[in-house]
Length: 314
Image 1 (cartoon, one colour):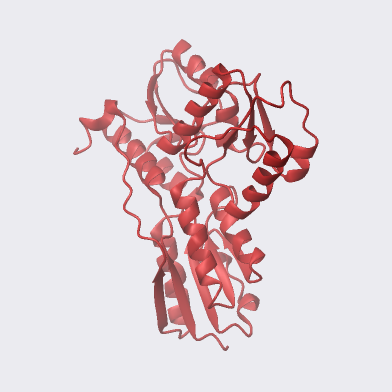
Image 2 (cartoon, rainbow, N blue to C red; image 1 turned 30 degrees about the horizontal axis):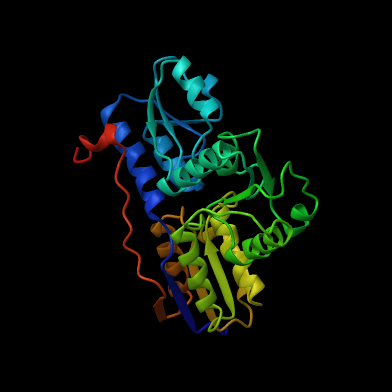
C-alpha cells in the first residue's frame, strides 16, 4: 500500500439547519411522550434517522399515517401548504423544523407568484425540498434541472419570469442552467440573495481546495442526500476520483491501490462520528499523517421555533 496521508476538509458535516432540525426532534422527545411523528426523514442520513427512531421518533411519508391529535415535526426540507392543511384537519400538534434557508425559498415563491411571474425552480425532481417548494404555487412553478430543460420551456409571458433554487445544488451545474435561463429570458428576475445555502457553498469550496493535493476523495453521506452527492460530483468534475460512502464499511480496498493522499469530507447531514470512524480505519492501516485544511470559517446558528424555545434547556 502506498497510502501516506489524509487531508480532512473543514468545514464538513452538519450545517446549522441540520443541527437545528435534530435538536428540535430531541427536545420534542423530551417534552412529549413517544411516539413523536416526523414527516419524512428529519435529515437525509440513515444513521441520524435510526438513532432518533430508537428514541421514539416515527418517520412517516403521509399525514394519514399520524393519529389524530399526535405530535408531528416537519423535516428540515420543508413541506407544502397542502401538507400543513392536512395536519391541521387532523388537529395535530405541529412543530416546524424547516431550515430557515428553505423557508426563505418558500417565501420567494409566494412573493413571485403574487407578482404574476412564471417561477422557474432549479432543482432535482422528487427531492423533498423541491416537492415542498412547488406546493407553494403549483400553478406558477416549473421545475428545471439542466440547460436542456430550459431550452424546452414555453411560458405565458417571457418578460415575467423569476428564478428560485433548491438550496443543496452544485454551484457549477447550477451556473450552466442559470446562464441558459438568462439567455432565454433576458428580463428574468432573481431573489436579492442566492438560494444555494452557505453550507452547500462552503463544503463545495472545501472540496475544490482538496482536489489540488489529493489522489482520491471520500465523501461521507447517504445516497439520498443531495448535498453529499454534489460533493462527490464536484471532485469528479475536477478530475479526481471520488466516492460517496454511508460509513466506513463501504470503503473498498481496491480504491486505495496506488493512492498516496486521500481527502475526506462529509455532507451537511452526516454526523461527525462517521468521519472519526473513517479516520480510525486508516490509522489502523498505518496512516499517521493527518492534516485538516480549513477554507471558510463557519459559525452560523439558527434559533429554535418559538414553541420550543422555553424547553431548550431541558
